[in-house]
Amino acid sequence: MATGTSLPIAWAYLRVSGDEQADRGVPIAGQRRAIQQYADAHGLYLERYFIDEAKSGKSDRSRDNFQNMMALAHADPPPCKVILLWSWARFARNQNDSMFWKASLRRHGIDIIDVSGETPDLPNGFSVIVEALIHWKDEQKLVEIGTQA
Image (cartoon, rainbow, N blue to C red; front, side, top):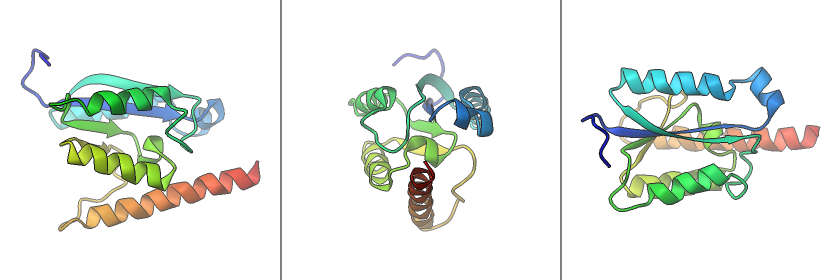
């Protein structure tokens, strides 16, 4: 894809579950700003945003823009070098979905980065273990929310 720049191409995925979450968390505009700042600071050309508003992270099936992003990302050759997220919880709250899609993207040569710094930069693949714990915590939060409803 011609971008007119020699910078690596990045895409961004943004999601909020609804207005209440946007009010007490980070709304789409805030996620967009943080991701753009990260891309600028790390020399990435942010080519495209995929946004799911008022969509739960409980399942990947109900998020049309997430599904579209995944279908496009698996083209050959990969259309981007990295997908940026505000946090892992925006990507998925289902641990199995999260691990499946991240492994699939990484096998295809696409990195996934949470710009919030949730995952520390650790040697020898230990960051994957930390990511797994974060995904477990995110899924537990979803269970907790479900029991409060």
